Image 1 (tube, rainbow, N blue to C red):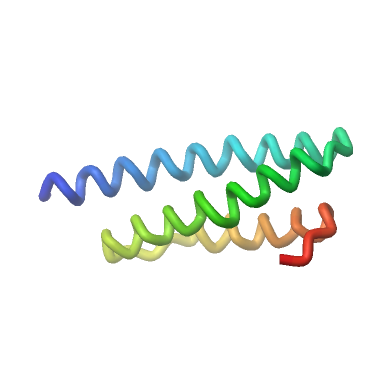
Image 2 (tube, helix red, strand yellow):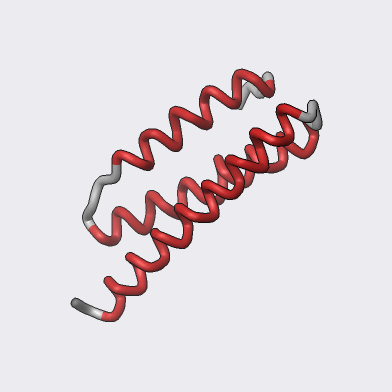
Length: 85
């Protein structure tokens, strides 16, 4: 396995861990009614982490059901926040 592939796989795993951390933070912010901070975590997930994971998976030539579930989960939380992105 090429060094680039190994690095991309490790990067994908790391990004998935960060996505889970930010989902927990987002859900916590929603439950505490801290919507401004929740919007910040939403933007990080939507515009930084999910595209980075998509890019890594594209490099690896893989498809991941977890990515689809992350997007669905984010859409559900978007409705709770009342964001119209």
